[in-house]
Length: 128
Length: 109
Image 1 (spheres, rainbow over the protein chains, first blue to last red):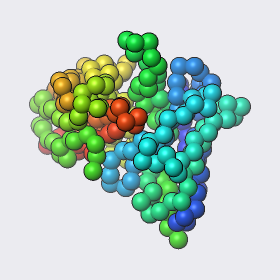
Image 2: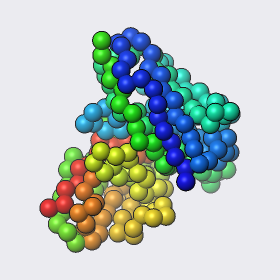
Image 3: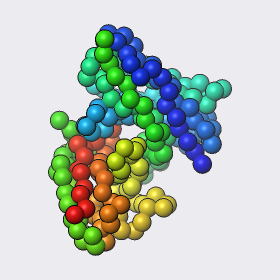
Image 4: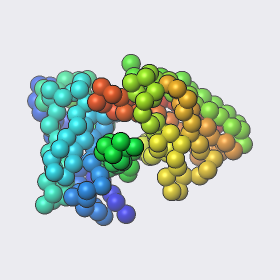
């Protein structure tokens, strides 16, 4: 059974860089059938997609966060990571990692699909 | 302000049928699939419906999804107390981003 686990500091200072890692167990991150994504949820609010990465390193980023986000993959460790720079209090959230499905469209184009499963999430607070 | 619009709350009594709406635009729901996620209190979201109306294995057939134009709906029939959760719709937007609704808190009375 595939499981994902987020890890990293729970407290980050304003203007610094938030760094999180997602460890995948029960399956290979090098599967050609999936991307791997990050999603966040501010306390009491809704979900926001941050970005997704393929085992080859190909990425999609949320345009609203793109200038501050870097997602990378380490296939040897079966992990992928998130870096978010210049954080402010608005970046305080529970950060989730998730497997991101792929589908083939009618035109034969590869497109992103569902998020499943999700990690349990980790709360990151931005505060001095 | 979420790109997809959901009612903030919904409610029903056990056994009832409830629906949750999700409104978008031609660049997201109007041209791409809709997904639904269930978030039980204190837990991570779980995939409930994918590609408008498909259920992952293990999801009861009491849950169903539909889409028409730039709107979508999640229906839950035979409402049970364990269905009390937050429900989120999602879709790919042609601006190259996944977008979510603000979530609907379902209360089972």
